[in-house]
Length: 310
Image (cartoon, rainbow, N blue to C red; front, side, top):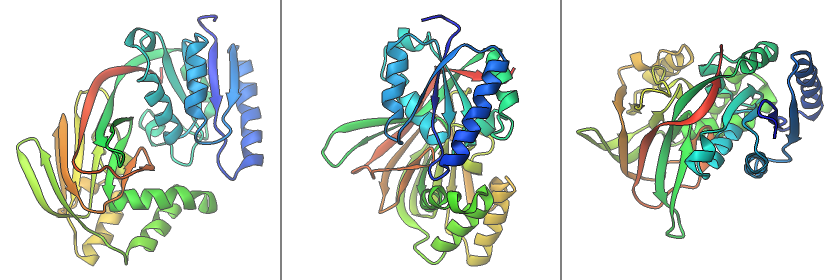
């Protein structure tokens, strides 16, 4: 495979077929105008990204560019983490944001509405080694599992909201509107969960509304996290009163959630969740099957080559 040739995986937005085809044509023309040599494949569904990434790796592509969102990017890095380090170190991944949620792309200031600038940045091939978070758990079959994440792990209320937000985004279009609608759907349901969590020297053993473990922005809950310092940011939110809940929502939207007195921030390399009764768990905006028993969340430093703005 030619060293400079890109392997592009195009992930259309669910429910936006006509829009997706039009958008790909614009991206394709921009790639040609910038003299990019590439081969591209299109994912058929959410389960096909893993297979397509493996195909790109096996065919020797050194640059794999994903036209998609957080979940597809999560599948990509998990696939890369399955290959030998020697192989992984030869590959750089890039993102042209095109998903329902593009939080990791937003961290790097990639804009889904300005793919021309994104392609010009990617063409410069500025590579940075970035960290990944990793959750290790046991599933219902008793098997030891692990899943890597770029952005965050959510446990509790926000995982439920993010799950609904993914489903409602296609109806509302707006990230903010879909979040508000999801929040309203859940506001009268259970808002706290009995948890036992160990972070650094602290043990939290009480009811918790939500916890976010962020390798990056964490959808606004870990705004100071960066994926290159070998640390995870953690926001633990206790159950506030109703008026405080709306205040917290306002601060969340404004990106100032850490200013709320019900939010308790930490910075660490490892978290042990010994108990999280009935709490949903989301990884990079996608629900995972709830682990059986305790699980740990750690960080692995500088393991993925990522293309960042020039």
